Length: 125
Image 1 (cartoon, rainbow, N blue to C red):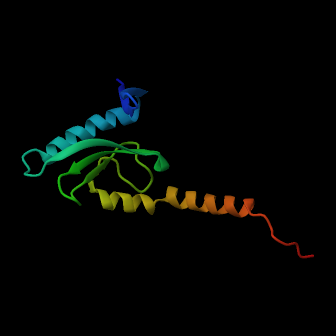
Image 2: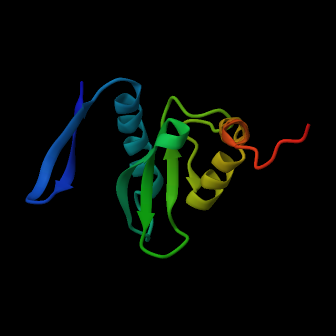
Image 3: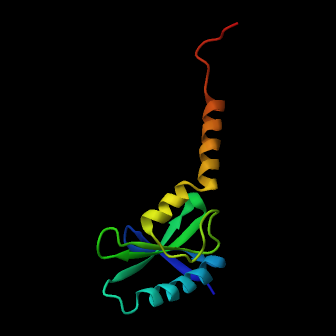
């Protein structure tokens, strides 16, 4: 199985790329999970697919009608510190991702790269 992704182009929607692999199966599972979660509830959710490239992750985004109602379902494989298919309020999942080991490693790498690229303004010696 595969899925085609479409993006907005200057003349309207255009083909972007094909997706296959674990995220596709996980997306189908998350959609079923979302339907069971929201079926029969008074609130309405609009399903969207959220790509989180900084975390090498994707999530099913259930966009609620009211601010603060958004839910995220991380897709497998999920980043470290996050359980796949655990439905979380959007704010909580985003906070977890910011505290994740991958985020800390990126920060440390960025600091090291900036220090290595720094040019001395004066030599003492």
